[in-house]
Length: 259
Image (tube, rainbow, N blue to C red):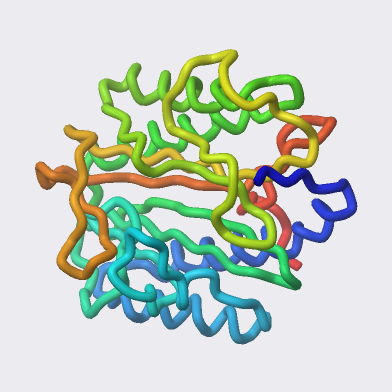
């Protein structure tokens, strides 16, 4: 069921958005050559405890997961692009790392993701991250009353195709509110003018993710981590966005002042 939030409820979601943005920023700053993925998860866990927030991941067990996730953060490295289960891996020079984090604050959820390169970057990785960011911005720009869900999806897909990238439609954005994943599903490609009419009060996570040379993925033996079938690297960006009378409101904006 698709739920619309009142302006007052969207205001109540702001603290969750700010918290998630702060955690993502802290993780991006912490990620470096020599840092273990488990250290990143522990940093996120410590921030959850300090804020008295609740993890959306640790007990998460959807049909596509082999078991409850067991960690509070997704860390996807190089050919992993989504749902990366933190494990005993020390980041190396040039690794492309995507961090995805969702948490509940006072009963409201926010969800965000960011990709960075640690150490010496490859030009093609920086380009992939830049394209993924532009696709996210293009999708957000279409999140306005009177537009259609397909306008968001088409804008994301157009950026990907113009860069020569394929688009996988198995996983995409989603509704956000009292839980992490709700209706509607927000594909990363589509046809403009089609689908759900966007109304004020709809809150969604918009999350483009792309791989260098394929759009095919498989599930790692850990039962969670999704990797490219050809070994190419991936990038993933995500923001939680509220549709308001004045246009899109990015609740997980990392440029906002910390509170």
